[in-house]
Image (cartoon, rainbow, N blue to C red):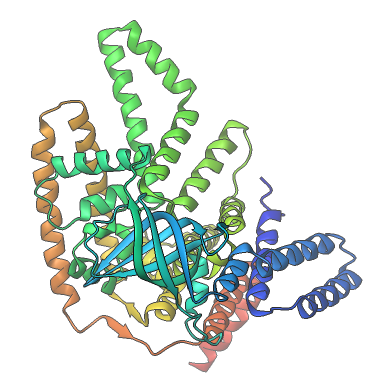
Length: 508
């Protein structure tokens, strides 16, 4: 891949700008005029014809966002006050006296039956029905009006579109309900039952969250403690889990290779030859199968795409560039739903990975020039950089930053890495009927219970937690412009940095 040109990265920037304009402006004229003016000025100065390509990308992204089916469906629903709909349940949130169902494949049955693009959230009060994912529900609903908000406030309609939801409604009457069980649901249920059988003493729900991404079984107080301390990302399925799976696959191949060497088995030699020859393909199949089982969240999708790009680059012997691969992952996610750009999960997930990439660039540049970076402080510096990169975003969405996260990530992340590796190994031992699985499960649950207790005590402390008022989006943008500018100056303008340091020393 092109390391210097980074065409996909530049294209992503123009796509993001186009999506932002598509969310702000509801008419074509102003963005088209701005794009034409900027393109003409840029070309007149640089004589670089590539700006016309990027200008076209901007216009396509803008029009794609402006006239996206989600937007049209959201406007369509506002023309109805009541309706009769039928759809498949994809998500269930149970609250006190209320069940909130997200349904897809929605069919509108007012006069003429019509399929509607996007998902619908419906609220059902005091229902005796035991709802389950993939079941079909037909009901009469009352459609809630759209919420109006300014650009600087939380936009609930924008949040709904980022989740693919085009309307919210209250159920007046359930007309029909039919239970359905898909193959995927059977697979997920079988995996969950198997994990619960092995880890029957786990009352925290963390094991299920770590392996299957099912957060519904985690105690609210436990999740709140993790969130307050800035380490809730540990419980989210991400690239770390895929990395552990890849590591286990490698160890598994090595284990079989050792057995074949000891026993001189022709069968094992054949298996090893097959695994080595098709290891990249097998890895891709397992990674995307795991993605299919645990769900389609932004973090796991981004990680699966990145690993797939790396593996495919290895197969075609093409140089891998981190930011190019990350840009391709972002473009694929945004092509499916451009409004994902404004979701907290997308922004935090990619901001974290981008921060890691920039940190590695600065680190390499610093090491080449000074060779003074202390390995003992590298983890502390790394986590501080992550906080600087994602802290403002977290404060914007949640109005709080935890300084505990800098220290706890250094300690907790390796422990949970070991726990995840031990858990997957224990599940594998259970499949192979190795009796050690019960003993290991008890050890893992004991470790988790003690960690949860310690974290709960720390979260109750009043120190290390900084509360914020609502931060303006313009302040957030200005912050990242300043940080990025300083990084670019540091890397590409050594003389200027020396002058700044000299002025600073003289002022002291």
